[in-house]
Image 1 (spheres, rainbow, N blue to C red):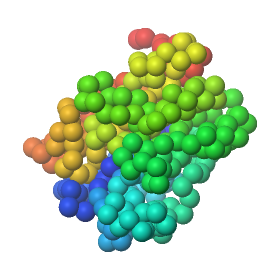
Image 2 (spheres, one colour; image 1 turned 135 degrees about the horizontal axis):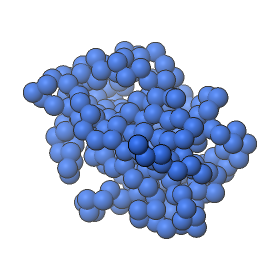
Image 3 (cartoon, rainbow, N blue to C red; image 1 turned 180 degrees about the vertical axis):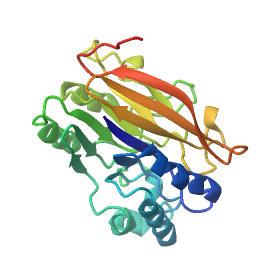
Image 4 (cartoon, one colour; image 1 turned 45 degrees about the vertical axis):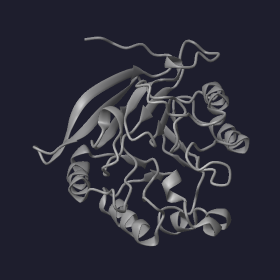
Length: 277
């Protein structure tokens, strides 16, 4: 069984809450993750100092492979020249030089995609056709039993609380391709509230028997939580074996000075059925 710690939307800068960040650093080693996924928005305004602090925070987390993608807040908003000429320059300097990349283990394969698209859209993001071709080249040759996981900052699915979030343009095009490639899960952030479900919840697609598990993370360390997680901080722990995917959703509680699990979700791996006790 592999364990994934999924965090997102750290927002280093004014919104960052240090006591929550410290609580995450305390609990992370007890989870014993094999992999850490951080799905974007490391900073609030893409400033050098904010990236330096985010980099130090990532280094303080358990020393395991880290899957990272940029978020729209990691692109300068008001520094227009920089946004047009080197929109992710500081991200590449401090967080990751790679914007689209693959990390593969024996039984897990992650495809991390840059959804920021700073020259087209600032907030809603975009996955381009060439990125989907990149996914096809990688995943079409993946081992048959490997769990295939896509990571992007922006959300492919609307949250079920009707807060009128716009999904990425061409999101259904991407989902169709991911389904054909046998993707098990999509991990993301951006919404500042969690959503754990399936693409079939909102888009029937062409394969009614499976769909793709959607795992959205709230804001893990900032005061920018929204909707049902207003002013709340959350993260997910995902455990995968040959038969099932277990997802535990954690929330920070002030009275406990730390995170605690608040819900669990169990999904069968494609081709499997849930074994009920």
